[in-house]
Amino acid sequence: MVFVYAALGLVILLLAGDALVKGAVNLSLRVGIPALIVSLTIVAFGTSAPELLISIQAARADVPGIALGNVVGSNTANVLLVLGIPALIAAMHTSAHDTRKSYVVMLGASVLFIALAFRGVFDWFAGILMLLVLAVILGDQAREALRHRRNGKAEAEAEDLEEPEGADPDMPWWKIALFLVLGLIGLPLGADLLIDASTEIAKMFGVSDTVIGLTLVALGTSLPELATTVMAAIRRQADVALGNVIGSNLFNLLAIIGIASLIKPIPVDLEMLYFDFWVMLGASLLLIPFVFLKKDLGKVWGVILSALYVGYVSIVLIGG
Image 1 (tube, rainbow, N blue to C red):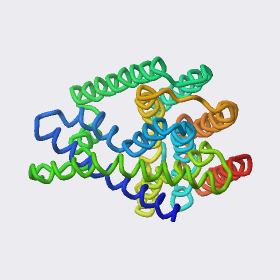
Image 2 (image 1 turned 90 degrees about the horizontal axis):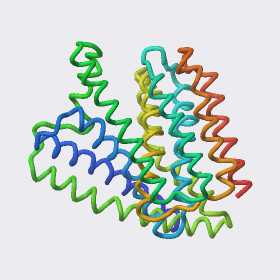
Image 3 (image 1 turned 60 degrees about the vertical axis):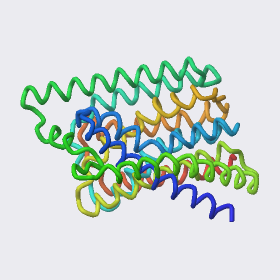
């Protein structure tokens, strides 16, 4: 039954996160918040809500390995799996989108994250610093998007920002309220179920909570991104996947652990510090040919990335 509870918790988390995004986006648009700000903040926070609640609940339940493992494992899975498996279906033409700046920012955030981890704990100082860095990044993105609009550039991007994820101009107020209530109730409920079940699974198999966080929980929270990218690859529309992964990883590092560490200090597992963090950084560095050299992500790279993820998870499970 413990696996059923874990699956149920994950499903509730993902559905509640989607409901919260729809409710928050449409509430924000109805009260007059610009679509650009909604896209850069509310949608980004909302789609990361399941990971955020897991990290907060794990920290409060004294299983910090799940809190950190969820973020580090998700970032690794995003690069190796969320890009690898769709590449087996159809080549991604990364040259169509310039992700150089956001990629360098993500690498900088990864280095900052690892540097703070060497302090041995993610505490209020680390949390405030990471959230300040995130605020600067979001502010810069907003200024750049507004500048492009004023200059008449990036018209397609501007049009995309006018239609934030989950936007429905005709959504009635009662439906907005229902989505918000379902999201706000479902997220902590799903997180509690998943954390409790994951802890029991760790005890059953004699592995640490860190291992469960890096594998089961991280993979589970990466499934929506994987499903979305696979469907886009089937439709031959997965070219934006690289930019989505970079943005998701950046947000995971700065926002999720940043907020969770303000709720309760998160101690750093030494094994993660000397292995898993560097695997996450190494996976990110594998993107250099696609970001700077405009290489296409084809089937060969799909095999390589997917095989690397299977190998990584195998090492974690065997060592755990």
